Length: 416
Length: 158
Image 1 (cartoon, rainbow over the protein chains, first blue to last red):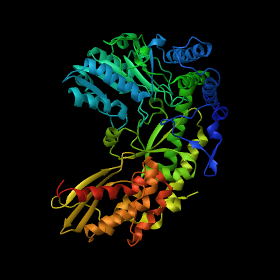
Image 2 (image 1 turned 135 degrees about the vertical axis):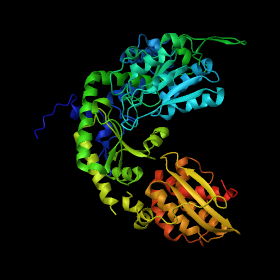
Image 3 (image 1 turned 45 degrees about the vertical axis):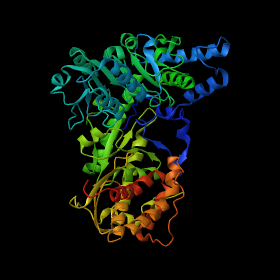
Image 4 (image 1 turned 90 degrees about the horizontal axis):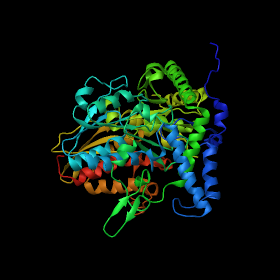
């Protein structure tokens, strides 16, 4: 078979942008296949953060001196980059949080507590991450909302047969744009349209989407979208809640204190303008700078090319690993690469995923094992745990082959 | 650098492939307790029947990795027929073998100095000593023991 490299990305060159990929583990090269968990960081992000601390470190929105103005410009410049990257109409629709989990908690606890009462329904899907489940469970316990579930089919797609009935009378439909376990791409626009048709708001957990697929929140038409910086080449400690200006204006503040106020008296307070109304305390300034640099890095690659690369590499992985291991290897989720992201949850024979990934580690292959913070989905899949390999811009066919070799090694090690 | 053979000793793999005392007991009279490893989703069910201060019978249910399953299997063989005092001493000895590293992992040194009675013989359980070189797996090894302790603290039934 003639192999012509048609990769949309120059991965050999991209690998050189990520210093960590130069290190050795257990005497071999690092094969990082856990980017759905957290991505690695390119030198440009690390240098932007260091540069901020070395040249412009000061608190924001306060000082009248030069470096304070630089710090404020760095924070707000990063916000503008993020807004453009996701197609927001304005930077004020982009709220910086600690991570996607905090962003989803903001929606449930600030908007939810103000707008939901006993008996109101919130519709989730069975493939949600715990971050989009537990805050709603809390509202069930606190105010008596009802949580309804859109089921997942065996092929990894949602079962939308009963969608109209499930959303009937609901106040919120909240769902992942892409499954962190199965890689399934959800029909975001259809779910948003259905939610709005029923009078519900639509909340999108875009944590696995924004890093991998060009994202346009206006095209989605959603009310809120949440994602995190560290899965998209940015640092930990910064996430994003995007919301339409309309719904953000109507949402009470979540965390309160400094920065988020317009005025405070002994009698009370008034809130600041968007987005600062939701950003109490000193924000993660250096992390915002890093996230802005990550956006620049991904823009430089081009999100269309990123997606094309991942579809091609996922197709290679599904084909080569299935060819190599046959029925012993069970890969969950959609079989068609174009319908999924580069996230492959799998089990191999009767070897427990933890034992699998322990052997992988000896070969320098970093793969997550466990329930991936999606226990309701694991129950539906009928497994307690899976191993999960996930691909990103710096992965290539050699990395997938290394995973195959590591599976071979585990099979030999645990052979009866 | 610790290698896989430090972790997966032959006796561990033997208990994993042929688990002892696998199954269920009627509860009551036995006590049934479930244990969860929140990190990995492993679930273990311990059924223990204590009569007159002695572990008359024990069964292990649930599922998990080779470390959690072999530890549970070895534990079941080690405590069956033992008095509660003997089980406590054995548990202290086992957790002592694991403890320093486990607490270091938790950033909690409150119980870091569990003193094991040197007279207590761990036998096959010694094979799990290599787990301490793989800190994230310590909770796999201690899951069944913590579940047993919980079961012994509860009245018969649920």
